Length: 90
Image (cartoon, rainbow, N blue to C red; front, side, top):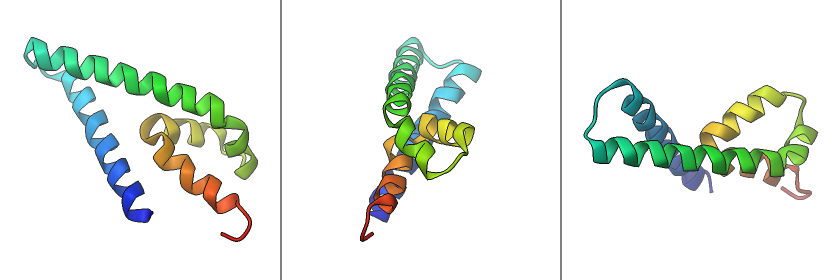
């Protein structure tokens, strides 16, 4: 499970770096459009994830802003381990 989460986090971080670099440097129209749309879709998906899972995450600790930014960056790869750690017997 830890390897899976690490791979997902690495992929998402690489993707966010590409989205950021797309805003800084001039890519061709195809890549610019692709990274803009991909970044927007991931941002919207992670925002929805945050609002759906917010109550379960804030029960873990009171670091609301930290959880928000981590979910925006990593999505489910951040909150899955937190939720699994809450379960009895884990």
